Image 1: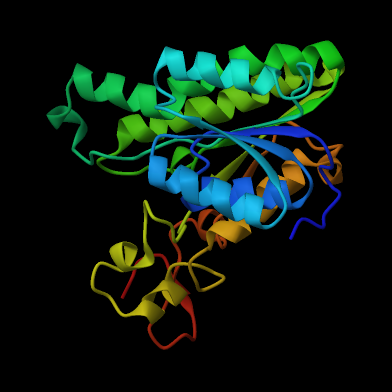
Image 2: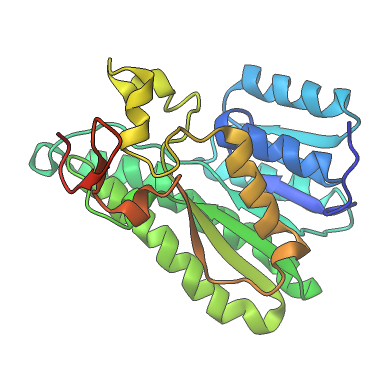
Length: 273
């Protein structure tokens, strides 16, 4: 049931907002009173999210389509600007993917372009399409979704890491450029997210569930709702003095930086035993 007031009557846009982290974000922002414009490529996920939000008394406007396509971005822009006389309060650039995983020398330019399209290009396009409405009103919050893999080295995914690092740099630079205009820009960097894209069973790769205790200081995987709560914080006035930040939402894995709890649970080492 809609009972929150943190985003009452604000217009919030979420890309890839049908499942996983994006689906949780759409539901969470709607629960706090936002009118959510949600883009999603999967019609079934989109329908489910819309039904859930409306069942709970929220307001949501679906935009079906591939956010990599210019036409989808244009449709999202038209739909959003038509909600409340051109008002845009929140933008969550959520879409991204890490596949395929290859050694860099095994990739080609088609792979690089595909990774650019799914990770970074649409962030530029969507932000370019919707930020002017924020700048014109002198307020707004943009939340980008990158990854902890943009902050550390990752084998077989160098291009993925590089484009997510670009998201982080884009976030910081826009925050500096637009701070005087009242628009805040931040990002979250997830890890160990138990979602449709990266289910816990896949991340365990046959290991016992308790193995995660040795990788993460908090000792567990993160749920979509937990990532959505951080997005809500950055989207709302709770973070009104926060901009240009990339917040790791990772159970402490980035802070641990390669330190592993031993099997007995009594100490840490910089290599798994």
